[in-house]
Every structure is written in C-alpha cells, then in structure tokens.
Image (cartoon, rainbow, N blue to C red; front, side, top):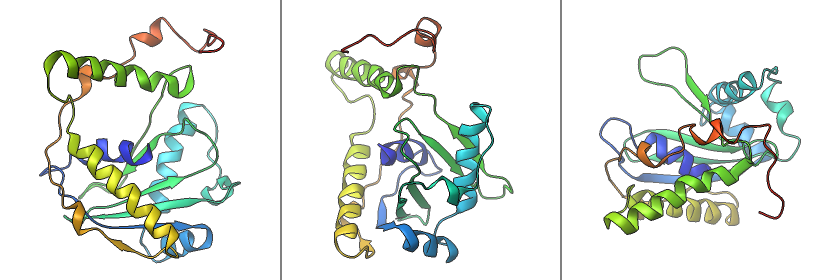
Length: 205
C-alpha cells in the first residue's frame, strides 16, 4: 500500500514514469546508517510526519523516538535519477503521509492523507467505483503499469530482505508510462459530510 501511495504521486513528475533501477530494503541500524550516508532523508520523513501531527493538533516527537517497533524502509532509485523511500513508522495502519523536495525549492512539500472515519475501509469506496467504471467503459481508469511496477518493487524488496538486505538491480522494471487524472474516481470528501467522525462504524462490517 505504501508503494502504491508513493507511485500515485511520483508518476506525475515531469516526463511521467520512467521505471525503477534498483530497490533495497533495510531494517533497524542499517536503515539509520543509510540515512547518515545520505541515501534517504530524515528531514523529509520529519516533514511527512509533521503534516499528520499538525492535522491532529499534536506535537511531533523526534523521529527516532517514534520507532517503538523496529523500523524498516524500502529505498528506491528510479531510472531518471529520482530517489524515494517508503518508511514504516509505528503501528498505525492508517498512516499515509508523503513529503518531497522539488528542484529549486528550499522547503519540502508534505501532506497527510485522511482516509475517513472508519479507518482504511473508506479506501475501498474509490476502488469499488473504479471497478464499476472499468466494467462500464471497458478500459482501466488508471495505468495498469502502476500495479505492475509496484508489484515488481515489492518483489525486489522481499528479495533484498531475504538476501541480507543487499541492493537489488531491477532491469526488468524498465516500465515507462504517463499518469492519468484519477480524481473522478476518488473520495473527495462528499461522503464525509454524511459519515463523520461522530458516526459509529457498524458492527460486523
């Protein structure tokens, strides 16, 4: 899911998606050593988490203090030079935060996705809507290449983890495509005017 969130955003960079050159999965001390070596950015992780905590009106603790469970990260290098990292921080299953740094900008951009009052169940509304659109219109409402790419990235991450966390070259992920505007299928807040945080989730759903 983290890879899908990442890909749904970065595929819209200039030139579209170019594919992935390498993937590496790191845990615990090795993850922090990679940060110290400049291979991923705690600054961006802080910005992503700050977006979540600001939305909740609470103070952001230091990043290293949030790892009550052992952290892990997937380090991704794209064929056009973009670098990205998917981090597992804590045990919150509805934590979908994102931050990036744009060329020429000094401060990162960051956001925290609100999935709705009933946790990740709300994500399936857009999914169901997209399936209906596919059946009705006869073509995929988003690039199928995205699923192929994220599945390949996940497989490479598993290979990395099972091979002493080594870097995995991914020439088979030379998958280029152009993004599609998916907003017509997404939950944009209309449902939450009816089902708010004060509406209890039905039992046995």
